[in-house]
Image (cartoon, rainbow, N blue to C red; front, side, top):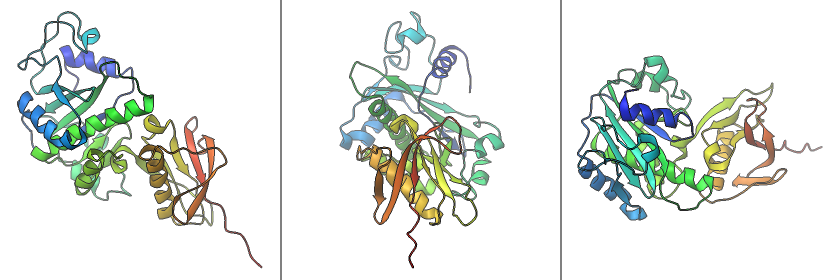
Length: 307
């Protein structure tokens, strides 16, 4: 995956800052489409959302422009040749890099670790035989539009996910692997989650990975997330309780939706009810299970004893 020239320079830059990347393991190699045809296809995907799609200045008749451009500080005065199979676009102010590769992502164990076996039983086996992959990566915002870091993160993640939707329409991958959360989305969930992002909602089953938190005696597992920090500044941790783990999971998803989709907020000590009939007390602080991680901790109050 780490080639020379432009790819090497881009990856060196991306290693130094937060970015959104998505990998699509393929059962067979997929030829890179014509840049203008894919641009038009992507425009169709995002048309109802009013998003714009343009070729990046690096692409001029499938050749890089001589100098300048949005990535000028990366590529210098003399732009290296764009590798075959690489496409660059700007989607509503977000620069995207899409690479079609005829090699596997990595070894079976490495790819398998993206799968949450609780959410996708058999997922590791499904990915084991992939032979090629497509990679989509955001290269940051272009232009000078002012927005909060959270809004910029949302727009960048949406652009990457919308590009994945365009790829899926032409070639079905074995999974969508979201690098910020190191999670895998199974094919059965593609349609629903891609439809959510194109409707302006966070596709949480893609952008957020969850893990069960080990309970004490007499309790059921809690839940902790990975992947939400770019959007809300923290992860969500639902403490173990006597309630079923399905309710802890529902609390995590509903709270994430409240904060991202509905732009809600929570305060330390607040009692919130993101799920009808299921309330939790908020603590803003460090995770009890992952040292140094800032979380929104949700604790379901114990029922009052009677008699």
